[in-house]
Length: 53
Image (cartoon, rainbow, N blue to C red; front, side, top):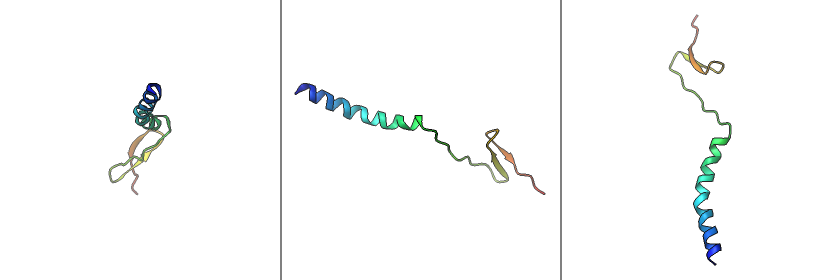
């Protein structure tokens, strides 16, 4: 009985840690927000000024 209780407690303890660790392994991309008059340049990974004309 002690072994089952210990395994259940261990599983309940590790479940949140494993669930949050899943986010670190996926390829998640966050949308960048640039100031008005600028756009996101994916190649350089920075905001660049929009050409006006």
